[in-house]
Length: 631
Image (cartoon, rainbow, N blue to C red; front, side, top):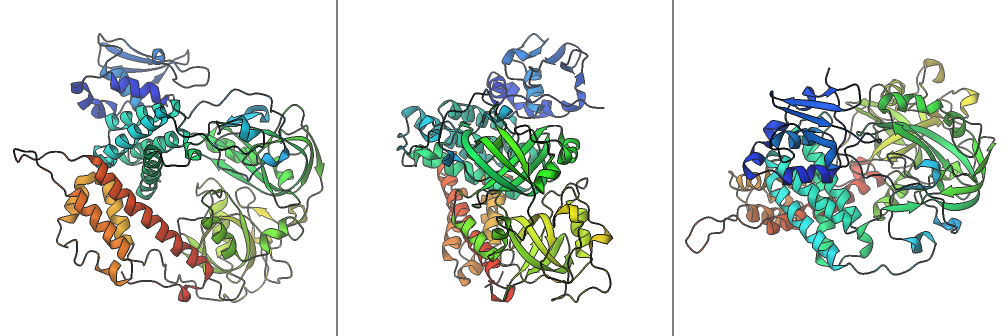
């Protein structure tokens, strides 16, 4: 049985690769393969990897289980520490997240610092005092608005270096984006972090993790996700390097929990949290009487087992005698609350909490979530670039049936579109998928759904909880102790929870209508961009030299559909990819990757904006009312 390698800090891996000679760098990708399978966990907690008879690499993780110092990775060969074995072992290990800031008591600031909840954060800060996120300062955490300082010369240099390395990585693509390319990205990302460019560093780490997943053909890896990561990295680094970006684009590193005074919050639902980095737990969503969202999270290392068990774990908040299941259907009156800017409630030493009786979704403040059409809520999210991806919306729907992996429903309002419901967490050991399959077997069933819109798909909602529709006859019959809702990640729906007797007739046959996003000729641009990510610049150039000319049939459907800007940007990208400059002697020279990266970024940015317009339209009208261009 193979031993899991300890996570390694990005700067440690970057330094190890940088110290290799050019000859050894060429061998690094081959040496990295199979390292994880050869790892052995020793009795003292170290991990060893043997390379032949004379080379033994030893990894000694720190108290947090992470390799954060160069001397925690050693090799017994004569070339150490500048040896291939040590670099290969570090390259095979997963990348560690940025270390959390040390806990500190919150500074006295007004309660207005609270913001919307974010259930996808990897972990809650200890004692509710600090968390990884914002650096800029005490002025923001003090509740005062001050103009952000201009970018420094060091930040401009770091952004320019990161842009160049990102452009090189894009030109290489997944096929050539091996350990050396990844190490260069990690080095530039670490320099960006030291300069205070936190958002750029995070974008670079996402690209590196995406390159690793694509090269290792991991399950669940999507080329579209890596394409989006490259777009975010190039956009952030390019704007920062230009010197004309809003200084707020630098991002934040430390964000203190601010005193929130006295709060009263009511439970909405709970959902499991399961991250790719091995964290697991639960987040319980709450609402204040004025509609402000809050959350209480309990996320720690432990993976699936902890995600499943945390739903009934005690809530560590001000001595409250509640578990997360009780809080999701109850409430709290909190004195001396501490709140993060994302709306997470902290468990500081001065916090006192008293349980409150629960309220149904038909009562305020939860009823406000179901009072307006879902299209309005989605349009608001799409229009706000700073809107949290974790925002929840509610709607009443009628079940149509299952098609492929979707559960089709129709919102109960005139001219409502078909909505596609997908599991919020598709892991088979969680209850989401099983619950949706059971619901799909009751066509005509009326449901009240609370979920998170998937803004990358057409009219798609990922439900986290469901309940009966008030006054409806053919709806759920839930136990009284559930208080009118079922958490799809923890509560398992049974036959007794559904209406007995003949099923109500479905309003439509269980068939999907046209998908304006998939049926639009924009897929041609998307395929070109993803081709560049997968195969690099050469793959785009080869596609341009195919049987279809740049000005001919390849982009004619785009022009016929009125998408002339998309056609021109795609043609410009293909032309730039195929540009082959020559030196004064007529010899082929490698072109700079900057022009190609700008052309790719322009096409990717335009595509993202166009797709968001189609997604917003898919929520606003029935399928027959959404314009769909020919392919």
